[in-house]
Structure formats: C-alpha cells, structure tokens
Image (cartoon, rainbow, N blue to C red):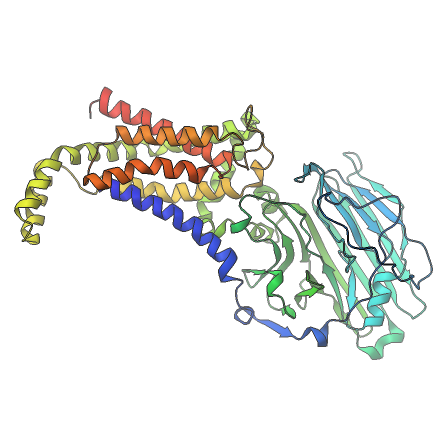
Length: 547
C-alpha cells in the first residue's frame, strides 16, 4: 500500500510539473469574451505611428551585450522645435530616466538586482524605438504624433531622493500651437516602487474631433530575465479585471482588446519583476494591443467635452509578496505560483512569511529553508510516527496476507473478509500509513511552489559553491545527496508488495536525482534536509523506541 502511495506521489509530482508546462505552452489565455472584453479591429482603432528617433543625451540605455542591434536607418527629423532633455530621478530602490520628448519613460533601473550578464536590471527594453513607456496616445494620428514627439517643459532637470528628502515631483507641460495643452506630473517616493501619475489634457480648438486618450505601458516591460522555470511561468501582458487575472501572450494578440468592468490594473511581468498601471479613481477601460510584434497595455483617460484627465499609480519593481501586499490595489495578484500553486495559495503565502521570518534571524535563505523544514517536520512528526508504525505492522502480517490471497484467489469476497479479520486481530490499519502521508502532500506542493517561484531566493547565496538558491546547484552536490538520502530512506522502509514493485521503488531515487539536477538549489536543499530528518525519525522508531 505504502509503496503504491509513494509511486502515486511521484507520478503526481510529474503531473503538476507537466500540467504547469501544458497550461503555459498549450492551453493559452482565457477567452476574452468570458470576462466582458470587447474586441475591435486594429485597423479601426490603432493608428500606425511614425518611427521615433533614438534617445540622445547624458544617459544611455543599458542593453544586454547578447542583443544584436538592428541595422541603422536614418531617423526622420523631428518636426517639433526644441531639444531632448533626459531627467534623471534617483529614488533609492529605483532609478528613472524620463524624456521631455513626450514626457515618457526611457529607462527604469533597479540597482539592487543584476541581470544574467551581471548588469543592473533595466525593466525597459525598446531597441526598435517603438512607442515609449508611459506615452500618451489618441484616436487621432496627428494628435498622437504631437503627444509623443513634442518637447515638454520640465519643472526640474533632476531629482535625488533620500532619507531626509523622501518625496519629489516632476511636472512636464506642453502648450502646443494647435491648442493642445498637456500637463503630466510624476510624484516619486524614496525606496518605493510606486509612482503617482496625473495627466491633464485640454484641446478646445480640437473639440470637433471627439478625441479619446490613453496612457500606455510597454513594449514588453519587465526586463529581459531568463529563468530555469520560464516554461511554467507566464511573461507578458496581464490584466486584472472582474477579480480575474488574464494573461495575454504576445503571439495571440491580433487586434486591440478593450477590458471593461472592475479593472484593478494592467501590467507586464515575468517570473520575478513587474510593471503595472493602476487607475486611482476607476477608468472607462483598459486595453491590450500590439505594435510591430511587441505587446502594449494601457488605460483610458476620462474625457469630458474637450478635456481629459487621469489619476493613476505606476508600479515597477519586484514581485515580492510582502511589498505587493503592502501596496494594495490587488497588486499581489501579479504573483502567479502556477496552476497547482494558486490552488494552494492559502498555504504558499504563510510559508513564504515563515521563510521571511527566519531570514530576519539568519540573514541567509539557505539556513532559513533548513529551519523551516525542521519546523514543518516537527509539526508532522506525530503523523509520520503513526505512518511508520503502521508500515511496520503491515510488514509483519504480510506473510499471512499472501496466504489468504492464495487460498481465496477465486473468492474475492471471502478474501476481503479474512483479511479484515487479520487486520483487526493484529490491530493493523491498512490505510494507517497512507493517510498521514496524504495530509502532508498539500504542504509539500505549497512549499514546492513557494520556493520555485519566490523572488526572495533570486541571487540569494547559501554557502560555498551555492551562490544563488533560485538556480540549479552548479556542481550537483545537493541533488546527489538528495538521491543518496532517498535511497537510504527506502532501505530503512519496510518492504511490501511484489518483487517487481519493490524493484521499481528502488529505482525511484535515480529518477528523482536526475529530475532534481535542474531544480532550484533551495528546493533541493529542502528535500534533502527533509529526507535526513525522516531517516532520523525512522531509525528512532525502528531501532531505539522499537515501536
């Protein structure tokens, strides 16, 4: 019974890893018409914008060295008078570069984090010079051209925030000869990933055009970050509307989609980082569209006659549980633990908080994982004790079970009756070893996803050769230790079932070792320590207490 349970458990592990892959690669996003989304042809709603000049100025955009630059094509001369100025904003955890050309965001660095090449992470990558992040857009191509290419007047050349200067405001104004007046304001806070945004547009001479405006986010914001678990993690445009998280893979976007209802935010994200636009006072709708094979999301501005305005929040930073919970606005729903992990989110979040608590004591996530594993093992020790006792009892009556099965092989009802009498006589419960193990499976799944998807482990060292708990052990030391402890654990476990079943079970440590070679080191450490604790408990039960 217990052997079959362990085999079922292994198959279950393979299923929920494979199921995550299936959802990410095969199933695709939730159909739009199920959540009140209106689809419009991009030819009727989306204007083709002229190519933009590359940014010039005192700051340069950091690009991965592995990205090859496109063939240089002379950009058209900007018809608007003025000169581009790049405003630097240093806010502790974040560093912004904002251009007075369109009042858009050109660079957004997170100094605490490095990308795969060792450079500071920049959440913005726009090598093709598409519409810039936080650009304004209208349903009129001429007005869009003015909004995105005219030079605004900045209120300050730079902002440097600190512990003593925790808030700063940048205002950009435009008074265009067409009668289009725009005021854009950004309020930054020290060591906060949240920026307050306000937009005010007045265009009285253009009232006959019935202008509608949007503030857009893109292209593909979130940083170019690779991960060993990308195959079960969605990266791209995401919308949270009507209490539902909708993923929009870029390859599936064929026209402009408008999302209506209780819209909380529109966002871009990958496994560890995200950027989102949050309407402060509600909005008419959000949208997702594509420009030259790059995705964009946006929010509609509220229009009244010839003017429009919006008060939004802009979040750009890490997908850390505590930070997103503290910021509110349902931003915590940006975190996705995979299909199985979301079902056990009620366990995932407490486990992450326990992990953070131990980190506050040890300042090392490796030791925090070990301490948390010990606590979990201690809590489940009574159930494990009961399970091992039941296994031992089942092993003792196994010869009698085989006799009964052989004697009554043609009469299943009589066989079951005699076996139940045997179990009752020897005070053995055939499911006694299964139930305690089954109760632990949800906790394991929750912990699996907590460690698999947690940014807290990204770049977190443990000791020696393990310099990043979110990636695989570079020398495979812990996967091999895990396989060895699993083999030893099976040797100590009472053998039951037919010989073929026992051989299959003895082969499982090899299978698990190869599976875990690519798993994050933090998860492998958890499993290894859990095996060691289980072996200790087995030895105590069978050889010391002689239960």
